[in-house]
Image (tube, rainbow over all chains, first blue to last red; front, side):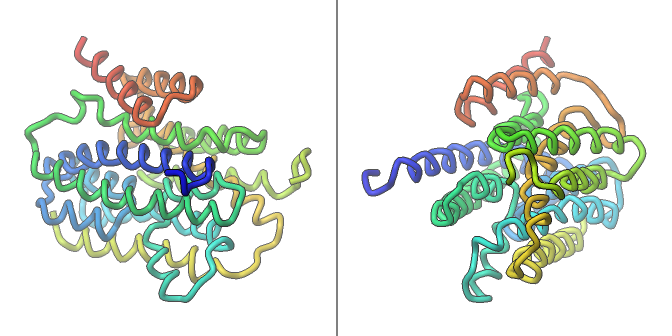
Length: 224
Length: 99
């Protein structure tokens, strides 16, 4: 570990613990997907190729409650649209060949964005991105396989596994709440989402919460 | 489940990632837009937390998950590690459900 700076070490430890937690959550996803009627192969294919947890969960959730394939895909894709916005936030820090960026794009998700954008230095941003992306991708897929094989043998709700995502998101949210602007965006985003949930299709409230970012149009008191 | 769900969801999700990161991404953005974009994780993560905790499909509900969220907030406030946070939140919800 001595070849890493203290900042890198703290990123490594955060990235690895995050991945472990995601692995545990992936087991819950695997169980949920198989009990919703997906095959083990389909459950694993979603984790490799779709690789954006909230969308995968949303899709199997719709299938489980008897929704159509198009409703499942539609809602899940609305959730996936936020990765485009994450990509915009990350892109200025990631130059490189087109091929490299096309590969990197697959790893632009909540966790990698949260970890990378929490760093101030460009090099540390790359470090945080990849040291979150690689262990997280591995653990997400390993956990998915385990959960899918366990199938309906365990009940995720009995173990409280359905709150794992929220708990992880709260932890990822914390660094964004240090500045007043971040806190305002968080409160506004949450409020928009809650207000819309009863009235619009599943997936849309999350997308609409993105409107909260318009408060960033004017510079804040700190002049940033 | 139809394989079309897997195919369309994977293609669509990747298309969104490429759209932001590669297609638009490399262009220099105005400062105001950049400031807005930096707020995205805060707005969306907060929205995901309230959605996952206080809703089931299109219904707003307060159930055992609320306790899990409260425990998670306490853990983060006390600067506990992510694994501790997740395990404590899940355990709190599971125990309350079992009562």
